[in-house]
Length: 108
Image 1: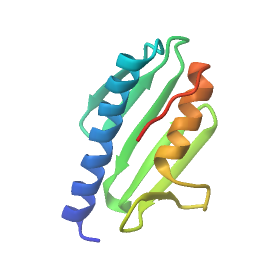
Image 2: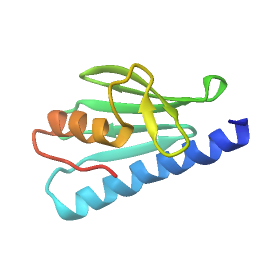
Image 3: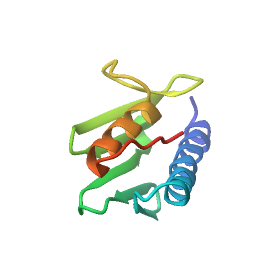
């Protein structure tokens, strides 16, 4: 994957996170906040906990930090998958965000 291809896919991923936050806030009472600064999105929950998603351009990875731990994802041509075989990005984000929010959330 070239640097340009990575950035296209990574920017699309960050946009999907932002759009999911907006949709979740419209459809639930989760009251989550998201803030984007460059290649990083910070999701803040009502209880003050956060999930941070950050682009790692030199490695062509996306990193996610949550209460559950830190995770690295690479694009496999179709989706973003955990580099240690622990699943797909949006499924994991949904699980970790739901745990931190205290209610089921779906990021897609």
